[in-house]
Picture 1 (cartoon, rainbow, N blue to C red):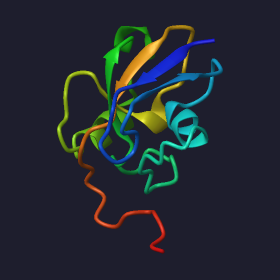
Picture 2: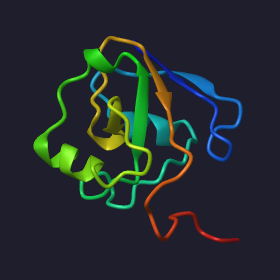
Picture 3: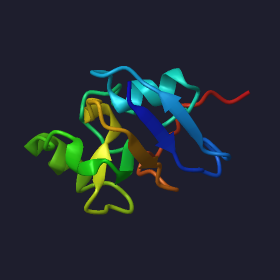
Length: 114
């Protein structure tokens, strides 16, 4: 079972966390299931860049991004060579260190106001 180490994010995960995940799950699903409310405006269909993450460790263990994912990534804020859309990352056996960028290009947040 791979470990997903999420680096601290001021809003979504202030302390950072370590998550045990199942092989074959999407990274976005793992984050959401563990109360890390990453944006995912297109409902995880690879039609936006709001679930953009940077894979700080374990990037080379992942399958290559599709052309569609690369097209969507070009719209992401703070794009880096190790950037991926978390909805398109299928977890393998390798542990990952993940950074959620500070900003997203989503104009309307998904969280409901109270």
